[in-house]
Length: 368
Image 1 (cartoon, rainbow, N blue to C red):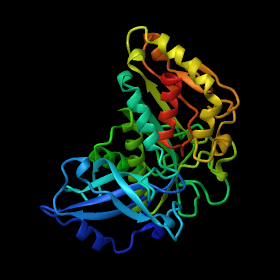
Image 2: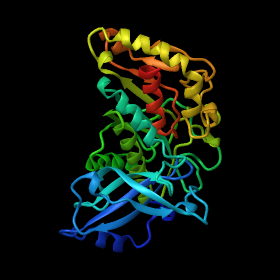
Image 3: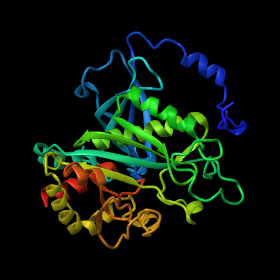
Image 4: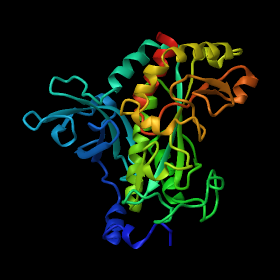
């Protein structure tokens, strides 16, 4: 039996669930699960509707509404908010022709809500489309019990020190691999560009990478990959924490980031290293602004993680280096050797909004 299947984590009526989920998908009808970002700017919400036939393109998915007063996005006296489909993925949970639909959130005037940063990001990506901006994001996260205690940690005290957990193998160092592998397969089924996954430095901490994605697709894919991760964890009776530095890890433990890889067409050409070095000057100029948008709480969350220790930089100073993981921005050794490639922005926190991060990088490097 999986070590995740403790008595308190067993789903209710599992045999009944297995029976009905094992039924063949409906031959013509399609279940569409609309997914959106709520008023926290961090959490996701979802609800499902039936289509008589599966729409063939994004414009055929109808705008839908929801109660914004229950998601921190409206007052009760004027609660209707709207969901505008922007990207569609195959549904790995329901299978068949069922889909997951990533949505914009709009107010009653059909303007973006306060936590809808996709609209702004999309406008920036359109302006720089000729530069073919490529992104990849490395999402770190912590698997926790329902009481927010990290998986694999003793309830009283601490696990053995860091060292054996990174890319670790074995029941004494890899906690929650079932969640990780299920999520990986689910993302592949959904059509998400999941690049890989690995166990991280802190016990119970993992990472998956999404990319390469061009422009606005980066934000769409990472948000949907997060939704799938939360859903997979739900099935195992555990939770996912995107907190960059949970209270229990405030000691000598690595926090969680969302390192973002970025390149332009010029950076990928021979001698593209010159364009990468030019980008460092631009990123330095916008460092203070970037630090305010690299987590959803104006930079406060990230300050708990960016201590200058545990493979992080000093938040008050911009720095860059080759193969240096204690810098704001790292140029990988292979990129320096080949004199072309990409840069890695190590500043974004694990709970960042990828629309804000990718827009910030693109604006800093290509529009300032």
